[in-house]
Amino acid sequence: MLIDLARNDLGRVCTYGSVELTDMMQVERYSHVMHIVSQVEGNLRADMDAFDLLAATFPAGTVSGAPKVRAMQIIATLEQNPRGPYAGVVGYIGFDGSMDTCIALRTLYMQDQWVTAQAGAGIVADSDPSNEYKETLDKVKAISLAVEQAEGGHHT
Image (tube, rainbow, N blue to C red; front, side, top):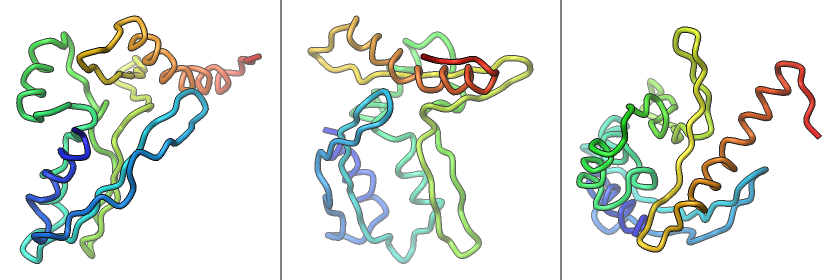
């Protein structure tokens, strides 16, 4: 589902026939979680630029779900608070048109005197709410430990 969503997003701005799946369902291991990662690539059309690519691919389907537009409408009605920068984009667009971005996950942001860390989990038909909740705690655990260590605390 998410691979198809990525292909669809890229297909709106890439040369016809150039969008391809180059890596499928590879497991990446991190300190507190594992992710299944796939790579979808395409050649940007000559009449498109980095801004068009960004508009076509964000918000990312991996954090909105599919179908993307309807999923975002549902999220807007269910979530009590705005996400802020969480699940948005962080990156740069160079003067030469190059772009490098990432999804703002496992990040801290500060507003006034509040520091916030957010995490989420993918909800599907057979999701177990307690497992999804545990996953969110596991995802934010590394951030919590980093803050604790920065404040001079010790973790065993």
